Image (cartoon, rainbow, N blue to C red):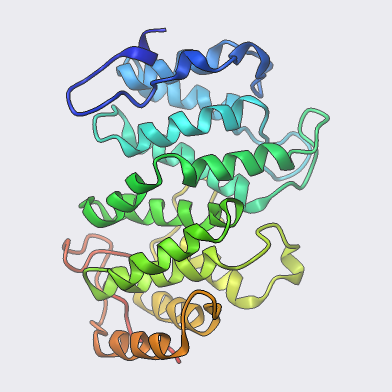
Length: 295
């Protein structure tokens, strides 16, 4: 397959290893076993990438036919590492469309198993999706958080890491927290603190009616509830409420009380009055640079 070996200047192609997957044993949600690798190749080559992404929605994460949920199948977790590398790679045509597709996977992972898919309880498929989301070139997601000038793309990467982290162990929550401490401005400090607290929330598939209110607040801020990844951008007030809740619920194994208190003071001092979603790179981020922390 051409896409598995196609090289471009700037590093190895994101579809390297595509031919090594035994796609013949991985059914997609349309019942096929041969279309997903072809579509991934079309995305990378740019040959009708938007059309290929649209078909990938139906084959990897369609609406469930019985309930209001996203359906997955064997081909979904097999495709996620390649989708992640495509979204990470600035050379990918229609890169943001791939990121939107990944947000659909993020939604499914956050929602957890709620109904059988094709006669199979999908917990194993969803767990593998979550692991692949954050374990595929993890350093590339963090580089994107630091370097990408597009605040929307950074926010989506943050959402992806925060949602999938519990399925990859506690190490990623710690990585997010360290990234917060190294944040270049108050805005990114606030958003990474929120993500770290959500990543350390514990059982990712606890029943929603038993979930603590602060977890739902952070989920709303992260925009996970919109399965198409187009949730309203958080306002400065929403960011203030979310970062306050995050600081109050960071576990002791992640952050000591003195550090949390110091960050709360820093964010209060940096309260800017807010920026819109088209803020400058220095202040861009969900709700501008932090906003006041509500104790």
